[in-house]
Image (cartoon, rainbow, N blue to C red; front, side, top):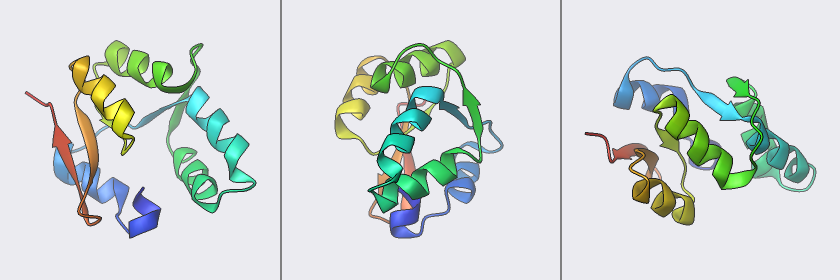
Length: 109
């Protein structure tokens, strides 16, 4: 997401939530590794993800993201429409790209 449109993820997260810890489920890193050989966006996403703390999780895919967000009382950064709906349904705040220029946060009380 950020590399596709030149959005600086760290600056935008700082603007929205201040200083924060960025955690990436190991299952997400695994998926990105599988795609990185053939998809340049996945390769860039993998490089970005590896800058942050990677947490070992047992679940895979979206389930690992939802579980980790619940466990850590976290906010999820994604542009995946189906995942956004699942997160909102679970009461988890979501940060997503708006107008290809900046990030917005929804669901934060």
